[in-house]
Length: 94
Image 1: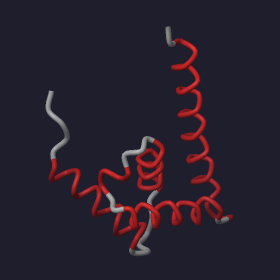
Image 2 (image 1 turned 120 degrees about the vertical axis):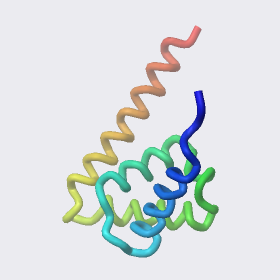
Image 3 (image 1 turned 180 degrees about the vertical axis):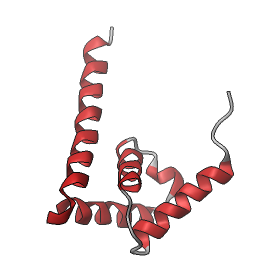
């Protein structure tokens, strides 16, 4: 099985940069993807330390804005799923 197409990955990363780091319009999908990358510790693979810190700060701003309650719920849900998965993995380990 081959990995993702590098050109397509680059397009997604550039979209994230444009939306979150350059104050573009932010889609719910981008917020969800960045949350997943951050929670899975994969964000360092695609972004510099500085960019990663900027992305985290921007996500925090987005999550705390009163107008973004749906985004906050989505990020909280992702956090909960990751926590439940971690607990399930630990409890089923031999």
